[in-house]
Image 1: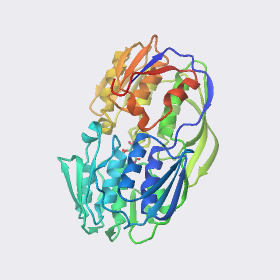
Image 2 (image 1 turned 135 degrees about the vertical axis):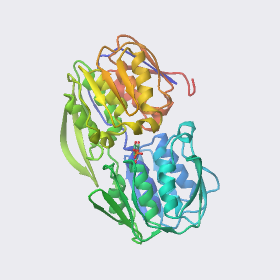
Image 3 (image 1 turned 60 degrees about the horizontal axis):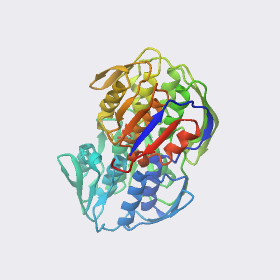
Image 4 (image 1 turned 135 degrees about the horizontal axis):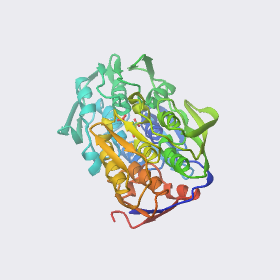
Length: 436
Ligand code: S3P
């Protein structure tokens, strides 16, 4: 599948992006090991979360889906999951694989986790290594999937200093900590998204933070809760960018999660001169939410503060496009993690931006991008949803039609992306069938 995007007059509109992917995965997994029912409304029906849902069903968990984007999970308790009859295929989802690795490490049964071509190339040593220190037995293909988790091992709590700021690694270790003897602590080099801590606490687990160290104690029963999943700020970033780089646009993005451990994109874009206003700031359960008003803005170059990277880790493809539309040369550094996401996002963006005539210089852990007019051509998404969406938005202000290849994976995080962009005036059509 591909997109064809033509120069567009992005105008005004009001959108509700789909539910938060990170929170949707966690609602399913944590609801599964709680006692009683967890109802998650606003759940993201994207391919990644549906892979988690299918895997949990294979583990014996009953989950009902309704047409109104809600799911009801009947929790089986900490020890109620049963051995799956098949390998658990987690598709494109790194979050699912890493969190499941932690969740399954302390079970009495064995299981195998696998995924698509992209996921099969992603580093899993970062979760396998600390979990093995806790006493788990996990076999990998040289640190990559498939992961065979051997059941029946008693885990022991550890105090682990994570080498990279990663919410996925932190969450995997905390989940394993629910099954360990003694306390388990994770020291983060920088704060990463804290949805796990918030949701586990709301369900009754004993989780506490002391400066950069997060700890969990085993033994507290978890109970099912009602969760209202906010709109995903990572998805909202794309229509936000479309409005910012347009000539005369004002877009309202309603009901978006603005958890401070996720909201780095707002800080960074504001530093670049973006007019982003938060209205009606409120809480949706344990998560901060707001309506965002975005107006076309004259963006200017910045030198990124690397401390902001973990707070905006998924937004760099879009931020690179913002830099391409800004006046001056933007310098991004501290981005080594981008090379091991769904694709190597530094090189995927650099290749496509070059095709569109943008001057840039790629570095091992960053990129310097000089703003300028966006040209036309064919760009590759490398099957990465966020690369595809970033180029779709860039193309809205190109001088001619841009073709973006291999966009089927947009459905992993943002079902309805094309319709939503069309509704604010982006001239985008989707063509071809999966694989073309
Ligand atoms: C996620 C954490 C981030 C992010 C991913 C979702 C999560 O990964 O890139 O899209 O839900 O925990 P890392 O924590 O590995 O940086």
